[in-house]
Structure formats: C-alpha cells, structure tokens
Length: 329
Ligand SMILES: Nc1nc2c(ncn2[C@@H]2O[C@H](COP(=O)(O)OP(=O)(O)OP(=O)(O)O)[C@@H](O)[C@H]2O)c(=O)[nH]1
Ligand SMILES: [Mg+2]
Image (tube, rainbow, N blue to C red):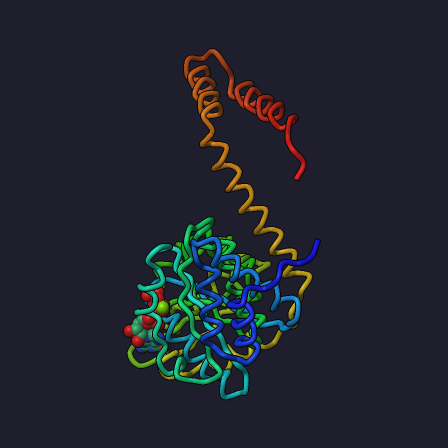
C-alpha cells in the first residue's frame, strides 16, 4: 500500500513550520483542534510528517495552581528570561473548566503582551474540546507534540489545578510546578499527600511589597508540612513574577535535568491506560443491556436476595461472555 500523498495545505504548513513561521504553526494547531474530520486529517498529516523528520526535544514544563496565583505573569517572566539566554519558548494554556469556549476566554486572559511581541516566542491558548480527564485530551498531546516538532527549546504549559488534572498533565510534561499565592496558609489543609508525589516544585509567588512577609511565612509552612512526608523531594521556592525575583532560580530548575525519553514513553502509556479505561467505562455504562443488568442486580441486593459479591460476579460473567465473541483489532 502506498502512503497517502500530502494535501497541498499540509505541505504548505509543513514548509511554513520548517521556516519558523508561527502563523503556520497556529494554523496546524487549529486544524488539529478542529471538529471537522477533513481538517483534522490534514492537521494529523502535518504532525506525522514533522515527527518523522524532526527529532527536536523540548523541555516541557507545566504550571498549575489556583486562579489568580500569578501563573500567567510568572510564565511570561520565565519566558522573557529564557529568551535573553538565547532559547526559544512556546507557551500553551489549557483550561479544563471551559472546554468549549476556553479558546476565546483564555485569549483574553492570556495576553502575555511583552512575551507575545518577541520573535522567538509562541503563545497559544488551547481550547481542549471534550475533556477526558481534567481537560486533557488526545488533542492536547497532539498540540504539545506539534509545538515540539516546530523546534522550541521550552514548552511552558499553564493549567488550572483541579485534582485529577494535575496527575494527567504530569504525564505529558517533564516537570510540574505548583504556583501558590502568599495567603495560602488555609490551603495547607488541601495539601494532600498525593500532591507531593506529583509536583516537582512548589513556588510561592508574589514575594514582594506588602506580601513579602506573608509569602515567607507561607513558604515556611509548606516546607514544614512537607517534612511530614519523609520521602518527599519537592522543593519550596519564593519568587515574584512582577519584580522578576527568583526567576533565575526557577529557570535553573527547569534547565537542570536530562530529558528522559524512556520515562516520557512510560508516562504516555499510563495516560493511555487511564483514558482507555475511562472511555471503556463510559461506553459500557451507556449500553442498555448492561444498564438493565446493573439495575436487576442492584434491586436484588437491596431486597436481600443477592450478595454484592455474587452481583458483581454476575456482571463479570456477562461481560466475559460478550468478550468471547470479540473481534481482534
Ligand atoms: N504583587 C504581585 N502580584 C502579582 C504577581 N504575579 C501576578 N500578580 C498579579 O496577580 C493577578 C493574577 O495574575 P495572573 O498571572 O493572571 O494569575 P493566573 O494564575 O494566571 O490567573 P488565572 O489564569 O486566572 O488562573 C494579576 O493582577 C497579577 O498582576 C507577583 O509576583 N506579585
Ligand atoms: Mg492565567
């Protein structure tokens, strides 16, 4: 079978991206995010072709944290600093709370004007479409990959932390940074054990002016709270995105590691497992026969005619018998 030839639009975009034309990159992302199958296919042609010919590895760093913590301001400060060191930088924003209108809302919120004026910077708010897990979709991965093939040294990703989302975005990036404002004392209660396993660095932002002592206190509180978990490796640092203090240290942190492609593959595999189980579960729960069977078993349990163990077994036996007639992929 011969490989399908590239659509003229795909070819034009590939050439554009290879010539560092950011409009071409934007067009490719729009195609990848499109609900129109033909457009999406052209977008995929661009991505597959670029992946084949361009082995660039970007450092992928995600920033999560409560609304207003200063993520955008911080990413802009970090981006500007990286540019002065000769790197080129892409910024992507994922908003799981507004999957459909996300693009336009974020376009307003994510101006990062100083950074967007720079030649070696690329900023793109991303409407994630149907959210699988906290807004992360296979399209999110495609978008990150195409930006990587476009040759950026750093891809900085802004996302709003909503529980599961942190775990999912972690699997798409090399480092995950939690950004917090100085008054985060109350949020200490929300510092779950899980977060220390997921986050690579906790940044207390707004360490400036009147907020300075509150920021220092917050950092100390986090440090001692983290000490409860002896195995933790999460560092706590202070910074001010507005005054650009602590930015050099953050930049060192995001430069100072070797990209591990094997680990990246492993994490992608984990993400695929989670997306697949969620999709399969949703599909199964929509099936009329299964809905009926669950209803029957539930009634039997509630009327003391059946035990939970037997009810589950009945469901499993039914599913297994369905799978016996399965097609191989
Ligand atoms: N004092 C001070 N204010 C800051 C700092 N960084 C950000 N801000 C202010 O905090 C507010 C929120 O900043 P953003 O960068 O939009 O915060 P965000 O976390 O991206 O917000 P969302 O995208 O809405 O979640 C703005 O008014 C910023 O000017 C800082 O280092 N110091
Ligand atoms: Mg923001």
